[in-house]
Length: 489
Image 1 (tube, rainbow, N blue to C red):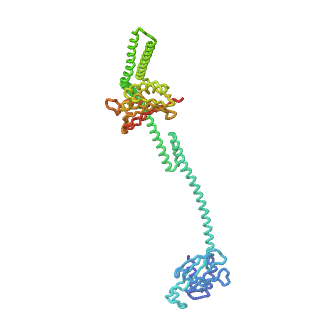
Image 2 (tube, helix red, strand yellow):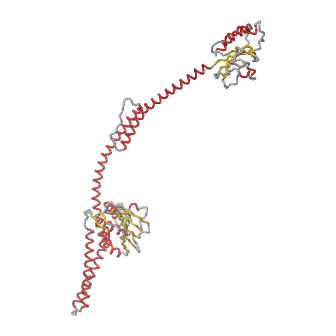
Image 3 (tube, helix red, strand yellow):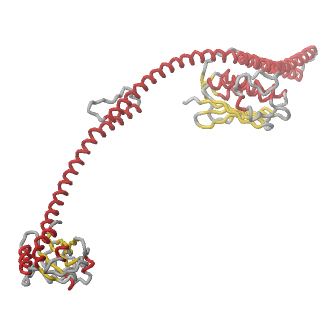
């Protein structure tokens, strides 16, 4: 603020010459100036010496500051210009009683200069630095009004600019960012659903980052399309090769089935020999009895009944031989994979009859328990019979003393039937149980088998859309399970 210096300069001559009249006139003149309310002069002890306020003025109370403020000396700096703002809440009697505007108080100290100390009209010693002080009060109403108006205008302008900027950002974000991102999301969803032809549109006015992402996305889809085409070609080639290999494996499997059938026939030959030999021996014995009886000339009714009874026995035993031979021929007949709807229990009954004598000869208790309520399946009966015989033969070979084998069925659910062959043999070690269905794997001695039986069983069951399971514990026996799908009526 330069007003303090201007006022001090205007009063300088009057103070130097100690012309009190001129000083008062100057103060009165200053009081009439626009922008200055009043000017007050105080001596070095802050006593009021001159004031521009007239005695009859109603706008001010006593401008004598020390009458209200005992700490007046501490309110301003002693040797430097200082400033203080007063308003309606400030406890200062120099403020207008009815005016609520703020005022600026400028404190300008009057310092002892060489001119003052050497003047003939003054006798201030040189060591006295401060001779008095000027308090100039300036109204801040116009400044506050201008500031308020400027603040209001600034707020309105800032609000308008912020609104415009916000709208611009929304439009910019929507057009330049949100729309391209939505396009990327839609393209991603289309690709997820299998549409490989989707591509993003590249525009010249796009943001560089969005444009880069769009180009990279399209390149990725192109690469995926190329990779997918290549995978499809590989898949077709692999499918063709798998089909050829499957055909080859099918032929090998059929050959292995025939090999296993021949091996099984060899194992059954001993039991078949016993089975046929016994009824033939009976035929021979009873034939000789008939011959002796026929030589007897006396044929009463008792002899006649005996002859008829013996002839009936001969008939039954002969029929049994025919059934045994028929079962053997059915089993040895080459299977052409002619599937038919067949009741599984009929096949298992035939299997049981075929194996019953060999089990009896081996001293094994052979029990059947066909508890399944529904047993109609789509199958090759001869293959099912072969699979069951292979399992039964393995079970019989795993039994040592007091052997027991149970052949039973049940329905795990309404869609399947399960065949179980349970023995109390030596069991299979847990370390090798997962290998039992592998070709040429065997837990028997080298002379007991070639390890194709269960592998062929597994192939037959797979050919019937079934599955095989095995549960075994060393020393406690084995449970072999075949699960087959039922025919839906």
